[in-house]
Image 1 (tube, rainbow, N blue to C red):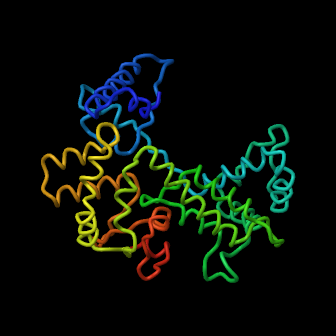
Image 2: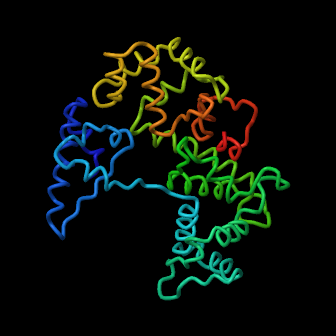
Length: 315
Protein backbone atom coordinates (compact mmCIF):
# COMPACT_ATOMS: atom_id res chain seq x y z
CA UNK A 1 0.00 0.00 0.00
CA UNK A 2 1.34 3.44 -0.86
CA UNK A 3 0.99 6.21 1.70
CA UNK A 4 -0.41 8.50 -1.00
CA UNK A 5 -3.60 6.42 -0.85
CA UNK A 6 -4.05 7.47 2.78
CA UNK A 7 -4.34 11.09 1.69
CA UNK A 8 -7.65 10.26 0.06
CA UNK A 9 -9.03 8.65 3.22
CA UNK A 10 -9.20 11.80 5.33
CA UNK A 11 -9.73 15.54 5.01
CA UNK A 12 -7.18 16.83 7.49
CA UNK A 13 -3.53 16.21 8.24
CA UNK A 14 -4.08 15.04 11.82
CA UNK A 15 -6.19 12.11 10.58
CA UNK A 16 -3.78 11.35 7.72
CA UNK A 17 -0.88 11.27 10.18
CA UNK A 18 -2.88 9.00 12.48
CA UNK A 19 -3.51 6.54 9.64
CA UNK A 20 0.09 6.68 8.46
CA UNK A 21 1.40 6.08 11.95
CA UNK A 22 -0.94 3.09 12.25
CA UNK A 23 0.43 1.67 9.01
CA UNK A 24 4.00 2.03 10.29
CA UNK A 25 3.08 0.27 13.53
CA UNK A 26 1.53 -2.54 11.47
CA UNK A 27 4.75 -2.84 9.48
CA UNK A 28 6.67 -3.17 12.75
CA UNK A 29 4.29 -5.88 13.97
CA UNK A 30 4.72 -7.78 10.71
CA UNK A 31 8.45 -8.10 11.36
CA UNK A 32 7.64 -11.03 13.65
CA UNK A 33 6.57 -13.06 10.58
CA UNK A 34 9.45 -14.57 8.61
CA UNK A 35 7.59 -14.77 5.29
CA UNK A 36 5.83 -11.38 5.39
CA UNK A 37 7.43 -7.98 4.88
CA UNK A 38 5.62 -4.72 4.22
CA UNK A 39 7.19 -2.24 1.84
CA UNK A 40 5.99 1.32 2.37
CA UNK A 41 6.78 4.17 -0.02
CA UNK A 42 6.77 7.56 1.66
CA UNK A 43 7.20 11.02 0.23
CA UNK A 44 10.25 12.88 1.59
CA UNK A 45 8.16 15.38 3.54
CA UNK A 46 6.23 12.56 5.22
CA UNK A 47 9.37 10.68 6.16
CA UNK A 48 10.86 13.84 7.69
CA UNK A 49 7.88 14.06 10.07
CA UNK A 50 9.54 12.50 13.13
CA UNK A 51 6.25 12.37 15.05
CA UNK A 52 5.06 9.54 12.79
CA UNK A 53 7.73 7.28 14.27
CA UNK A 54 7.09 8.17 17.91
CA UNK A 55 5.91 4.78 19.14
CA UNK A 56 7.76 1.91 20.84
CA UNK A 57 10.52 0.62 18.55
CA UNK A 58 9.52 3.12 15.84
CA UNK A 59 13.22 3.82 15.36
CA UNK A 60 13.60 0.29 13.95
CA UNK A 61 11.31 1.16 11.04
CA UNK A 62 12.89 4.56 10.47
CA UNK A 63 16.42 3.16 10.75
CA UNK A 64 15.81 0.51 8.09
CA UNK A 65 14.55 3.01 5.52
CA UNK A 66 16.29 3.16 2.15
CA UNK A 67 16.24 6.25 -0.02
CA UNK A 68 15.33 5.55 -3.62
CA UNK A 69 18.19 7.06 -5.58
CA UNK A 70 18.56 6.83 -9.35
CA UNK A 71 22.18 7.42 -10.28
CA UNK A 72 23.03 8.39 -13.87
CA UNK A 73 24.24 4.83 -14.52
CA UNK A 74 20.87 3.51 -13.33
CA UNK A 75 19.03 5.87 -15.68
CA UNK A 76 21.05 4.81 -18.70
CA UNK A 77 20.72 1.14 -17.75
CA UNK A 78 16.95 1.66 -17.76
CA UNK A 79 17.16 3.28 -21.20
CA UNK A 80 19.17 0.39 -22.67
CA UNK A 81 16.82 -2.14 -21.07
CA UNK A 82 13.86 -0.47 -22.77
CA UNK A 83 15.68 -0.30 -26.12
CA UNK A 84 16.69 -3.95 -25.95
CA UNK A 85 13.24 -5.23 -25.14
CA UNK A 86 11.45 -3.15 -27.78
CA UNK A 87 11.04 -4.97 -31.13
CA UNK A 88 11.44 -1.61 -32.87
CA UNK A 89 14.90 -0.88 -31.49
CA UNK A 90 16.39 -4.17 -30.33
CA UNK A 91 18.20 -5.00 -33.57
CA UNK A 92 19.81 -1.56 -33.85
CA UNK A 93 20.92 -1.34 -30.22
CA UNK A 94 22.33 -4.87 -30.38
CA UNK A 95 24.43 -3.91 -33.38
CA UNK A 96 25.75 -0.82 -31.54
CA UNK A 97 26.57 -2.86 -28.44
CA UNK A 98 28.37 -5.56 -30.39
CA UNK A 99 30.53 -2.89 -32.01
CA UNK A 100 31.95 -2.23 -28.51
CA UNK A 101 32.25 -5.90 -27.59
CA UNK A 102 29.05 -5.85 -25.52
CA UNK A 103 26.89 -8.90 -26.22
CA UNK A 104 23.34 -9.05 -24.78
CA UNK A 105 22.22 -12.52 -23.71
CA UNK A 106 20.46 -14.67 -26.27
CA UNK A 107 18.24 -16.58 -23.82
CA UNK A 108 16.88 -13.38 -22.30
CA UNK A 109 17.04 -10.72 -25.03
CA UNK A 110 16.19 -7.85 -22.70
CA UNK A 111 18.65 -8.83 -19.95
CA UNK A 112 21.36 -6.21 -19.75
CA UNK A 113 25.03 -7.12 -19.98
CA UNK A 114 26.90 -6.01 -16.87
CA UNK A 115 28.82 -3.42 -18.90
CA UNK A 116 25.58 -1.55 -19.58
CA UNK A 117 24.62 -1.66 -15.92
CA UNK A 118 27.74 -0.44 -14.14
CA UNK A 119 30.30 0.85 -16.65
CA UNK A 120 30.04 4.59 -17.29
CA UNK A 121 32.59 4.33 -20.08
CA UNK A 122 30.64 1.68 -21.98
CA UNK A 123 27.33 3.42 -21.37
CA UNK A 124 28.82 6.66 -22.68
CA UNK A 125 30.24 5.02 -25.81
CA UNK A 126 26.87 3.52 -26.70
CA UNK A 127 25.02 6.77 -25.99
CA UNK A 128 27.42 8.77 -28.16
CA UNK A 129 26.40 6.60 -31.10
CA UNK A 130 22.75 7.35 -30.32
CA UNK A 131 23.02 11.05 -29.47
CA UNK A 132 26.39 12.33 -30.66
CA UNK A 133 29.47 13.30 -28.69
CA UNK A 134 28.78 16.97 -27.92
CA UNK A 135 25.92 19.30 -26.96
CA UNK A 136 26.80 21.63 -29.80
CA UNK A 137 29.27 22.03 -32.62
CA UNK A 138 32.16 21.44 -30.24
CA UNK A 139 33.00 20.11 -26.79
CA UNK A 140 32.59 23.43 -24.92
CA UNK A 141 28.92 22.79 -24.11
CA UNK A 142 29.54 19.35 -22.69
CA UNK A 143 28.61 15.79 -23.61
CA UNK A 144 25.01 14.50 -23.88
CA UNK A 145 25.75 11.62 -21.49
CA UNK A 146 26.48 13.96 -18.57
CA UNK A 147 24.48 16.98 -19.77
CA UNK A 148 21.07 15.31 -19.56
CA UNK A 149 21.18 14.13 -15.91
CA UNK A 150 22.59 17.49 -14.80
CA UNK A 151 19.80 19.51 -16.43
CA UNK A 152 17.03 17.11 -15.38
CA UNK A 153 18.07 16.86 -11.73
CA UNK A 154 16.26 18.57 -8.88
CA UNK A 155 17.90 20.49 -6.04
CA UNK A 156 18.86 17.22 -4.33
CA UNK A 157 20.65 16.01 -7.45
CA UNK A 158 17.96 13.41 -8.14
CA UNK A 159 16.40 12.61 -11.52
CA UNK A 160 13.01 10.97 -11.93
CA UNK A 161 13.34 7.95 -14.28
CA UNK A 162 10.02 8.87 -15.91
CA UNK A 163 11.32 12.37 -16.59
CA UNK A 164 14.54 10.97 -18.07
CA UNK A 165 12.70 8.64 -20.44
CA UNK A 166 10.19 11.38 -21.27
CA UNK A 167 13.02 13.68 -22.34
CA UNK A 168 14.52 11.04 -24.62
CA UNK A 169 11.17 10.12 -26.15
CA UNK A 170 10.42 13.79 -26.85
CA UNK A 171 13.92 14.15 -28.35
CA UNK A 172 13.28 11.15 -30.64
CA UNK A 173 9.87 12.51 -31.65
CA UNK A 174 11.48 15.86 -32.49
CA UNK A 175 14.29 14.38 -34.60
CA UNK A 176 13.74 15.10 -38.29
CA UNK A 177 16.97 16.25 -39.94
CA UNK A 178 19.23 13.38 -41.07
CA UNK A 179 22.37 13.20 -38.95
CA UNK A 180 25.03 10.65 -38.13
CA UNK A 181 23.16 9.78 -34.92
CA UNK A 182 19.55 8.92 -34.07
CA UNK A 183 19.14 12.22 -32.18
CA UNK A 184 21.38 15.27 -31.86
CA UNK A 185 21.92 18.07 -29.37
CA UNK A 186 19.01 20.11 -30.76
CA UNK A 187 16.67 17.17 -30.25
CA UNK A 188 17.98 16.66 -26.72
CA UNK A 189 17.43 20.34 -25.90
CA UNK A 190 13.84 20.08 -27.10
CA UNK A 191 13.32 16.83 -25.23
CA UNK A 192 14.65 18.24 -21.98
CA UNK A 193 12.39 21.30 -22.26
CA UNK A 194 9.40 19.00 -22.77
CA UNK A 195 10.47 17.00 -19.73
CA UNK A 196 10.49 20.18 -17.63
CA UNK A 197 6.72 20.47 -18.11
CA UNK A 198 6.22 16.78 -17.36
CA UNK A 199 8.24 16.89 -14.12
CA UNK A 200 6.51 20.03 -12.85
CA UNK A 201 3.09 18.51 -13.55
CA UNK A 202 4.17 15.29 -11.83
CA UNK A 203 5.39 17.19 -8.77
CA UNK A 204 2.21 19.24 -8.53
CA UNK A 205 0.09 16.10 -8.30
CA UNK A 206 1.50 15.67 -4.78
CA UNK A 207 2.35 19.31 -4.06
CA UNK A 208 -0.11 21.55 -5.95
CA UNK A 209 1.00 24.60 -3.98
CA UNK A 210 4.46 24.63 -5.59
CA UNK A 211 3.23 26.82 -8.47
CA UNK A 212 2.05 29.47 -5.96
CA UNK A 213 5.52 29.50 -4.40
CA UNK A 214 7.28 29.89 -7.75
CA UNK A 215 4.99 32.39 -9.50
CA UNK A 216 6.18 35.47 -7.52
CA UNK A 217 9.77 34.64 -8.52
CA UNK A 218 9.06 35.15 -12.24
CA UNK A 219 11.76 37.45 -13.63
CA UNK A 220 14.03 37.06 -10.60
CA UNK A 221 17.59 35.82 -11.02
CA UNK A 222 19.13 32.98 -9.05
CA UNK A 223 21.22 32.37 -7.04
CA UNK A 224 19.43 35.02 -4.97
CA UNK A 225 19.66 36.31 -1.42
CA UNK A 226 17.06 34.98 0.99
CA UNK A 227 15.81 38.51 1.64
CA UNK A 228 14.98 38.92 -2.06
CA UNK A 229 13.02 35.66 -2.17
CA UNK A 230 11.24 36.38 1.11
CA UNK A 231 10.35 39.90 -0.06
CA UNK A 232 8.71 38.59 -3.22
CA UNK A 233 6.77 35.99 -1.23
CA UNK A 234 5.54 38.60 1.25
CA UNK A 235 4.48 41.01 -1.47
CA UNK A 236 2.46 38.26 -3.18
CA UNK A 237 1.00 36.97 0.09
CA UNK A 238 2.13 33.48 -0.81
CA UNK A 239 1.69 31.81 2.59
CA UNK A 240 -1.89 33.08 2.93
CA UNK A 241 -2.71 32.10 -0.65
CA UNK A 242 -1.41 28.56 -0.16
CA UNK A 243 -3.31 28.12 3.10
CA UNK A 244 -6.52 29.62 1.68
CA UNK A 245 -6.43 27.59 -1.53
CA UNK A 246 -5.16 24.25 -0.21
CA UNK A 247 -6.77 23.69 3.13
CA UNK A 248 -6.81 20.27 4.75
CA UNK A 249 -4.84 17.60 2.95
CA UNK A 250 -3.33 19.79 0.24
CA UNK A 251 -1.76 22.48 2.40
CA UNK A 252 1.59 21.37 3.87
CA UNK A 253 1.18 20.76 7.58
CA UNK A 254 4.49 22.46 8.46
CA UNK A 255 3.24 25.67 6.86
CA UNK A 256 -0.06 25.41 8.70
CA UNK A 257 1.79 25.13 12.01
CA UNK A 258 4.20 27.93 11.10
CA UNK A 259 1.26 30.20 10.30
CA UNK A 260 -0.18 29.47 13.75
CA UNK A 261 2.94 29.80 15.87
CA UNK A 262 5.76 31.44 13.90
CA UNK A 263 6.64 35.03 13.02
CA UNK A 264 6.57 36.23 9.42
CA UNK A 265 10.22 35.25 8.95
CA UNK A 266 9.47 31.86 10.48
CA UNK A 267 6.71 31.28 7.94
CA UNK A 268 9.05 32.17 5.07
CA UNK A 269 11.72 29.86 6.47
CA UNK A 270 9.17 27.04 6.79
CA UNK A 271 8.12 27.46 3.14
CA UNK A 272 11.75 27.45 2.03
CA UNK A 273 12.44 24.29 4.06
CA UNK A 274 9.46 22.55 2.42
CA UNK A 275 10.74 23.46 -1.05
CA UNK A 276 14.19 22.18 -0.09
CA UNK A 277 12.75 18.87 1.13
CA UNK A 278 11.05 18.19 -2.20
CA UNK A 279 14.02 19.34 -4.30
CA UNK A 280 12.60 22.57 -5.73
CA UNK A 281 15.09 24.87 -4.02
CA UNK A 282 18.59 24.61 -2.66
CA UNK A 283 20.46 26.79 -0.18
CA UNK A 284 24.12 27.11 -1.09
CA UNK A 285 26.99 27.26 1.34
CA UNK A 286 27.09 31.06 0.94
CA UNK A 287 23.42 31.29 1.99
CA UNK A 288 22.03 32.12 -1.45
CA UNK A 289 18.97 30.32 -2.78
CA UNK A 290 19.13 28.43 -6.05
CA UNK A 291 16.45 26.80 -8.21
CA UNK A 292 17.45 23.90 -10.51
CA UNK A 293 16.87 24.24 -14.25
CA UNK A 294 14.08 21.67 -14.29
CA UNK A 295 11.85 24.04 -12.27
CA UNK A 296 13.53 27.37 -12.99
CA UNK A 297 12.94 27.54 -16.75
CA UNK A 298 9.16 27.00 -16.73
CA UNK A 299 8.75 29.42 -13.82
CA UNK A 300 10.46 32.19 -15.79
CA UNK A 301 13.30 32.47 -13.28
CA UNK A 302 16.60 33.64 -14.74
CA UNK A 303 20.09 32.26 -14.20
CA UNK A 304 22.46 34.89 -12.81
CA UNK A 305 25.83 34.73 -14.51
CA UNK A 306 25.05 31.56 -16.44
CA UNK A 307 27.07 29.38 -14.04
CA UNK A 308 27.42 25.89 -15.52
CA UNK A 309 25.79 23.07 -13.49
CA UNK A 310 29.15 21.42 -12.92
CA UNK A 311 30.44 24.57 -11.19
CA UNK A 312 27.22 25.12 -9.26
CA UNK A 313 27.68 21.77 -7.52
CA UNK A 314 30.94 22.95 -6.04
CA UNK A 315 29.60 26.24 -4.65
